[in-house]
Image 1 (cartoon, helix red, strand yellow):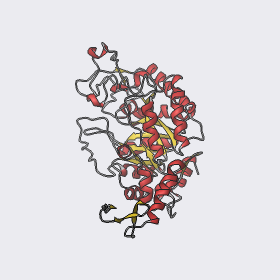
Image 2 (cartoon, helix red, strand yellow):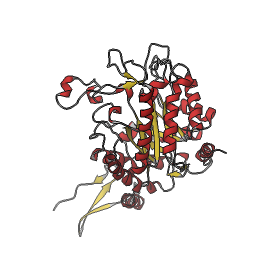
Image 3 (cartoon, one colour):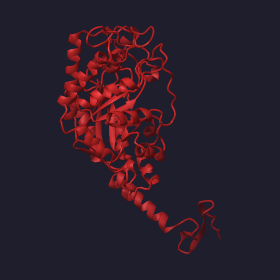
Length: 423
């Protein structure tokens, strides 16, 4: 049995356990994750010269405090020009290492597994963040220090009609770019991450090479599916070689392009087979990011709308998968795991709305000791609250003292004491 097959077996071996599968540990190479809940990468747009700030410490730390098993940071650029904005995260110099390590040490101290998603935006460079509608940077922005720069891409095609024209990468650019991924993977290890993910989705550079919409090359990095996959696979080989053999490597894909695109599930299956062969342990199944004029229909954002992609890759390729997208109910997350759609449930906006979702899901699914998910300092107080509820069940006759000889009946209907008789 190969390492990946063993990981898949480990990921599904507890399916008959009395413990909900969502809260069964999963072993990925040498890394044991406490449960199957993954805080998915979410760009924050608050970094300083690529480095994290107090925002990242608090934001990602709260997901670990709430009980998530894997806590990703955000899409982290392998070079400064690979950021979408001046405020995007990066790991392109050694000064960043200690800044991220501080956050990862905190996440690990809370029982969660810190993870990084490495990426490069390619042609999506030189923009404002989402609060400014991702508008391209201009000379007016340069006057306040936000200097525009030209993005790179497999072909000189703008990310959107009328957008900035990227520079087409030559073979030397490709070679240098792959080296950047290798170096970033090494820094990720030094920074204390236990899981590394390659971002090959959402219209970023790797996805731009994969999709026929954005890749019109006629050399060995374009044309056929094999040619368009070459850049992604060479990056995977470089990162896998730099990342320790006993630590897991993820790869996020856009299972299908966005509306009107051309990349589809048959392409993703072919890519996933090649990724598995190169040592990828989990395929993180997302979608979208590149649009076109083709027949690909818009993807409805309904609960579990991308879970079918994770299921098909898991079944057809035999590699562990992560399902993400509008998964908000504990029973739904558990069903997706038990029905074999995926091995990990990735959550983003739901955890932003409710960082304690894992703790509440553990209670809802009947986990024996749900408070084991949180730090002992919190668990002690929460257990005391539970004991109070056991000591005074609803409907019990209760009197609230107001003095040595003065009590007032408590009303369970009003959830408050009645009025005290004054003399």
